[in-house]
Length: 100
Image 1 (spheres, rainbow, N blue to C red):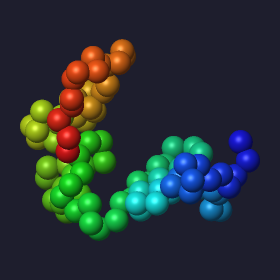
Image 2: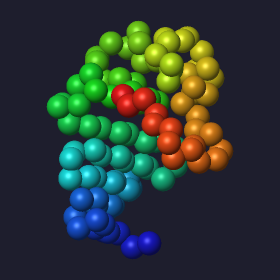
Image 3: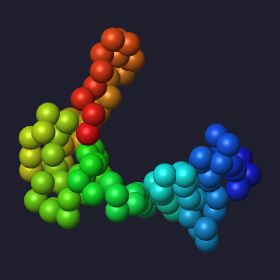
Image 4: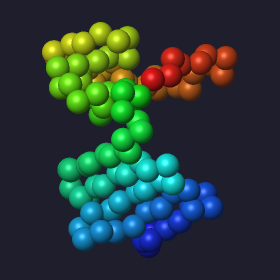
């Protein structure tokens, strides 16, 4: 795929900045990938304390970054990562996952 690419009427943009591929949204989410192993995800400040998942919860407290999907703080990276794994099949459409 050739970059830059604009999708969804400009709501999503993908481009190359130096050696990074960057995906940006119109609401401020930015994902930069160096095409080897480094990924940096940033969100605007208005998402403070509204995040959850593998990137932490954006509350500036590192002691609770390993909060699982069940809202438990764990010390094991494996337990933390596994808690956010998705099921290999699509959930029933009537199931509404708890939002962050």
